[in-house]
Length: 537
Image 1 (cartoon, rainbow, N blue to C red):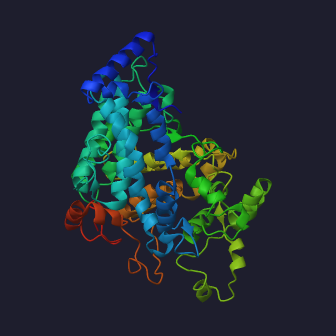
Image 2: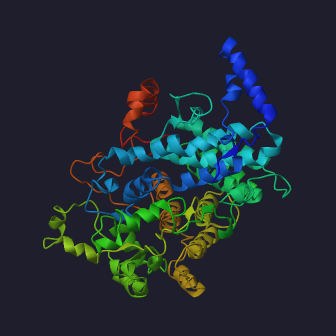
Image 3: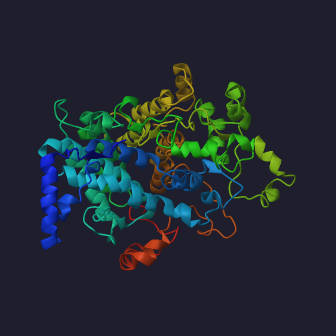
């Protein structure tokens, strides 16, 4: 992938003459003309905007463990009890114990990797009317990058973020999350309003691996993100939440799975495979070579929900290890009734308090993530599910902020989640009759209380959003659903409560001390239990 344009100026006789003259001038004044001479004719010196954006998408989807498995699975996924492990120091979200490389991972990836190209591209496109679609797409993508970071940590560098590359700001100040959210919503509104859907208007085109440069699709994602962020404010500022949710709905959110923003992957090299899912099956999650004794088992909470509801998504999500070892055996070992989730909050020793005759070989009896489907290396990186949009619209309707009924949006959400599997490998299809049966067995509780309806909506969001675990964690902190029982592993960081955030990297305390201390004074102690601005009790 070429990231810079080549300087193709030919070395002609006339140019050689100029160089000789320049050399003579250097004898008189050694600092004149040096810059021109110091140009490598074979170097790439001007950024290729399209290729930089392609690289930016790939790196944001997953450049390393820092922005994939660490925050998404080993922290948020374990907090939300999708996963469980007997190695609390390998899957630290199980026992709420701190491993700095895990808690630091997302923060470092955002500021060292994800924002690098984004900020450079914003600076290159901002003042060029011909590149207005490029610029506004980048504004939306920047919000996607930074909203995950602020949701996980709280107050973060935002207005000066990533400007070490463009403005030489190497110690950015931390901004209050209230100010960050106000600006992110403003950015989404302005970007969406300024996108021009005219196919003749220049855009990223094929270099846009998400939407192929389709400005109409980017508008829908902008408003869908606005809906997500607006709903995030329901506890801290209900009036502000209502305003932005209504703006999002009026602007036009996603209306089907064909609007989903995602990056397609292939089981190839590190720039092609899904880094998160690749780690599951090829490294330290549940590699096939472990024959059922890998660290990252499926959690008892998640598996129990799938079993109790006879959920047709279960075979797509989970299997016993034999199904992962041999795809031809998936149908046999992925049946929901044979799945078994590993209890939460135990290690290889304390599990014997719960199961006295425990042997480590018994791990083989517990379910693993399906490495052929939802966790295939070729599984897409989905930045936001359409089903999530429908569940948020169901809540908005419940609050009186949206048209249609909560029931209609709830059912659309379920159907969307049970029809999204065609984006993944494995040719898994849930028949319409099974979806109808599921909704008939679990009808929407329109006559229930507000909290009963909230619980039903957001339990389904939890089931639908598996492997988009960072977002599930944020939504759980806002709503409290589904109801989860925390663990109390010895030596944990929270006193036996599910964390409300993760701490900043210690490098911020040592290298950006003044700004770090200002953030702590504003937000509260740098602890797992300190609530971020929008996370009010």
